[in-house]
Length: 113
Length: 115
Image (cartoon, rainbow over all chains, first blue to last red; front, side, top):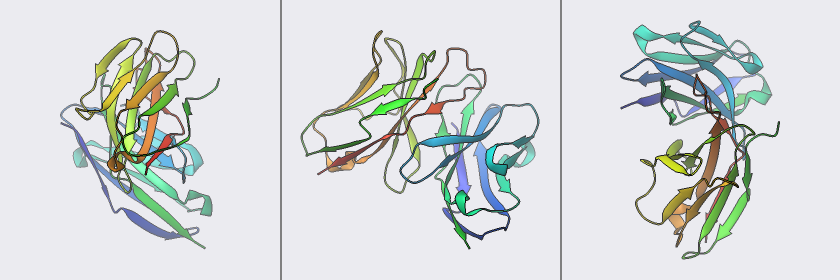
């Protein structure tokens, strides 16, 4: 069975500061990993995905994530937070050739001016 | 290419009524997934359908919930005799037949409120 753990349900950062959102997964087979962002009252938008190519993945809006198999982690970072980054972020995993995403509990990001 | 469409965006029902949620996948996509987001919780998988077939319904509640994806028309998630605990955001996602990386594209969701 797969599971995804996001450490910290709420993160507060200052504008211009580093954003670091943690995600650890457990999977019995090499997974595909995703980060999605959800703005208030909207659907999910894909930020980036890991599909067994490069371990450092660059996404939209300046976000990137690094897949570390030894740590079973896929943490999301952005060097400099912007007010528009305030949203909820979900890490998700799907096993290769699988069909359902398993989501972490989400991390709500607050950006302070 | 229009994205995944869901309607209605907001739905209010009284306890005991039926709720029908519709999802039109992206053009060319034949796989549809439904997820539920309960208040203050993450998203949970409900069901995976292909045209005229339910492939995986392991996340569906055993009673009152059903889903279909007919040959023609949108996918429908149906909730009979709704209860307050059904209040949630329901998201539909779709993917093409040969999505090698299994990326799913999400709709804007239907927010169901049960009074």
